[in-house]
Image (cartoon, rainbow, N blue to C red):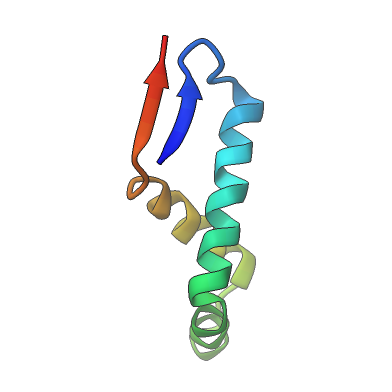
Length: 65
């Protein structure tokens, strides 16, 4: 669960959440994504970015006001 302050949803916080998601995806699926990117002639960083954004929807958030 990720706790967020509702008044602090600025660009910096969003980038931090994306970085956490990227790290999570790399730990879980890094080697699989690299193989997939190589096999399909794709940019690994772009693929990682897309998967990290999708992964953000799977987190549970607790917003405090």
